[in-house]
Length: 357
Image 1 (cartoon, rainbow, N blue to C red):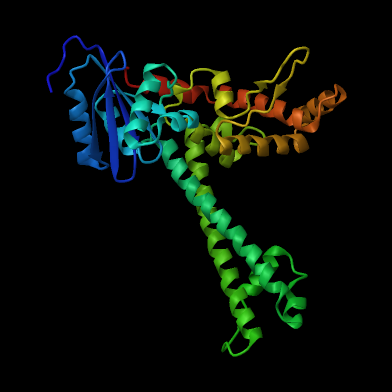
Image 2 (image 1 turned 60 degrees about the horizontal axis):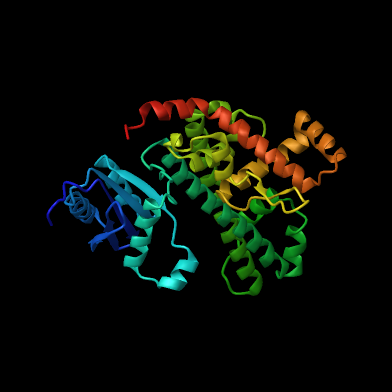
């Protein structure tokens, strides 16, 4: 492969998978230069980068699908080389119906979306405190789901238990029920009643273990979020869990989000115009990061119940004819704006430590 000194820019589109990455190289005017497959491991990343560098372009840009999953390792390797990387979404379904579907076509479409200016998103980095928060948040969320499932199962088993056992346990509160069931002594499992006691004790002890695990995760999340954004954690109705969700959507390189409206759109709270003719209205934005949107919703609900300025706002907007759903949407948008302002110290730090483009 002979480098062309006249070539100004080469875009490398990469379709990422678990075991192999498929790459296609396009020149500045969209001409296809080459395509190859590489192993999805450390040596494969080096081979791919050396192959791309052999084109001799003045500017080398990587358009990678799945930068937060199968493409995370390749994205980190590209950044370590000091090269540009753009996150690309999957190919439009209409285009797939017209042109077909293959790994090579997907990689080529990724590169063409960058050349056309349709893909401009800088992927999140995964090498800082925010990535630590994300990992712990994943462990906590899984444990919370398992704890909820354990409680539901315990109550379902109790419904079909023998009347004597059921009548003793059903009136108890949640924690009293857990403690009582965890202390049951089924003895030899030679009857249905003994089997029910064994099952209830097993599920209750599992719930206790999961509860202790969740508390450990919450302590770690509190420490890490207070380390980064104590002003956000202390905001009314936010706390460590909501702050963690906001940091995860921002990423360690929060400077990639360039404005407050872009932040609102990323959180899925920017209203979408839905006007036509004599009608002038906006509709709910169902895009954006759904976990961040859910965290904003929970914080807004808390404020609507206990925050006096928010309660006054709800009364005023209700008198203006707004529905509850519309008021919640407006409050989520205002809260996103408030959080963006509270993240200013973190944005300044990220901008100061960002590598030169």
